[in-house]
Amino acid sequence: MQAAKANEATKAAEVQRIQGLIQSLTGEVARTRTAAEQAAGAFYTAQQEYFDASIRADTLQSQADAEARNATDAANKAGRIAAQLYRDGGDTTSLELFFSGSAATADDLLSRLGVMDKLLERNQTVYAAALTARDAAQSLTDQAVVARDERDRLRRVAEQKMLESQQAADAAQVALDTQSLYLGQLQAQLAALEDTTARTVADYQAGVEAARIAEEQRLAAVRAEAERLAASGGGGGAVVSSGWARPTSGHRTSGFGPRSSRCGNGYCSTSYHYGVDLSGGCGAGIYAAAAGIVVYAGYNGGYGNYIKIDHGGGIGTGYAHIRPGGFYVGYGQRVNAGDLIGSEGNTGNAFGCNLHFEAYANGSPIDPTAFLASRGISI
Image (cartoon, rainbow, N blue to C red; front, top):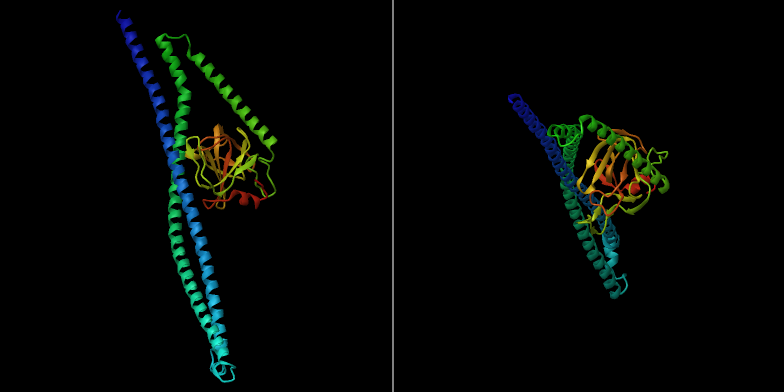
């Protein structure tokens, strides 16, 4: 009797231990997933703030340059008018001739005086415009300096948030992998102890192997479908002589720059588009535009599932709205131009399956259409 009670106590203790482990695994997955989602949201917000600041700095500098040109043009015009005034009456000989009796009639004299008056008035107006343009150019230049400083600060913030988001995503994946490795086994052990099923640990291990094979087959099918869609869509992944490749097949549905905000699916698009949207169809292949290192692969707020590649020399590319389970590369991986890195989806703020493709110069977004065109790629 005592032995039976001891066995029951041991069994109960083991059940409690296993239940605790299961709760710990499940809790860690939930905790790290929440942390990853929060970090991804912070990264997205910081990235958009940096992009906004970059465009503002560039716009202010362009305006400053335009005003500086206006100031130069106005100053040159004032100089030409002053030269004309000097030629018409700026030296003693000319003035004597101007006012002498040989200067024809009084009407002629008044007419000449009127012309000089107009020239003087016009010169004062042009000179005032030159001063205004000069002051405006200086003011805009000062604003551009401040804007660049803010842009650089926000870039550092965005880079830090990207690192934190990648670390959080990696931690969430480790927790999920750990759960996948041990949860079923613990549940099978618990079920055997509680006599609620005849399933054994060996049965569980066989099931895990079957699930692994099924997942490999699913991924292979997804890749094959992506390749098929790309082949039928035209041009995705083909590398040209410049060493660059079209990032996906399909047509462009939205370009780079200012646009009207569009609402739907519970959100509104931004009024400035920092990339181009290419629609090759749900599951269409996404390809590395050039060789480089994957510096981010994970969720990114409104971008959904997102990959960023550093190509060196200050050049980078970004790929957003990747479908769930559509990552074919990971953080830190080296890729070649035309490598299949993902497949199109509508994760994040998207109105349908597409690739939101971005190009970066020293971290700042640039027009991908013109950028790729200079490398022999039409999108």
